[in-house]
Image 1 (cartoon, rainbow, N blue to C red):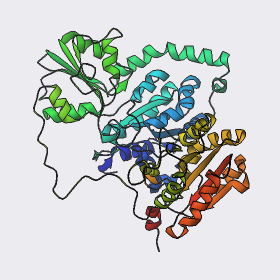
Image 2 (cartoon, rainbow, N blue to C red):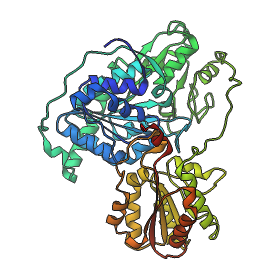
Image 3 (cartoon, rainbow, N blue to C red):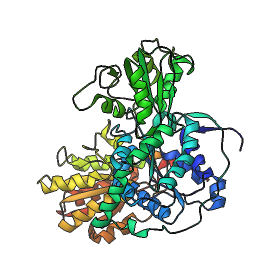
Length: 530
């Protein structure tokens, strides 16, 4: 294959495919979504029969990938950083069971919270699980690390975490592909008992994992992704993690032009020999990380900032937000590269629901009913309908994490606040709204779940939802009373009827009810041939 111009997400996807991938499992979430979308559009993946369907949530995706690895095949599971919280149960325990076929866990972090509730750093999960973590500095490394990560996983018989950040995931560069590797054959692990985490087995597995940590450090010291670049001015040494190395090179133009010794760090745990070599020769050290100060914190220690280490914890870089070349230049006392002025043709505007969006008419009906109740009783969730929190609607009072609308509405109802309403989308409902609804049905809590079913995962670009066409049957299966499971069509002509239905369920019923507002997303509808 000739040199290609790919997003970081696309480079990683093709790298995994070329490395003999047999299956990818994921739930859509920015900035990771394009990994799966690339594989779904790949003719090569289709011809080979590579599994590449969305999962109901990240926990399912993680465990499905573990299952493919158990069967000897190479698997990849992809999610955004907060999705790793959902997948954490299987992720952490996969480090205890170990793997068979290669297993690459991809977490795309979002420093600066461009489309997220927090800016957590997934490298901490690698440290927590005691497994190797890879962090590419550029798109070529993202491509290469898909192969080396799967190779490393099979060599160690452990999952390997690969961390991307937004700018690398969503920017393009020329990629030189490598030869294609054949897929593994299906096979069973030689020691199947290690996958049975009864306490006696888990303890022995964990002791072996802990005993291997020095080997992981040695592999980091020998990794081609970690290297110490010499510099003539040892008054300062620089540790550049992942994409921060690219930003440093942009500041100076090239590695040769940088006067300071630089430790390029892209494989964890931290390589001790390379780190010691840098610290011994340099008077001061600047740590550049796109995310949390994970490396810097380890250098400072528990008693506070070390006098010779600079970074986010010392104020030389901002403690929050994403790293960028201008911040790197400022930390080095250099003038940043000039940036072009904003185009007079562009202007900022707040995000809003699309014209004709079904959620507009759902919120109008809900607001009319809730005006009779009082404020503070509508719990929202993660999706494009979260824009209902903004003017002109100001219709929801919370947005915490996937599925929390139903859980919080139930908890508030338990506290005596009533009536309460949970607003949740169809994809988020099947992701993590089903189980709290089951709780509410079990206790017959005084709440109404308002499911905005637009037949897609709208916020991330219109991916298929695993519950498409099945939401009503799912609710009935959970035990929602048939007489209190209502379906409305959110259109202006149906406004009065929709208000009547919502009023009857929210105000006229003390117990669990579900109202499904069913109408296809305007964007997916426009893409269909007519």
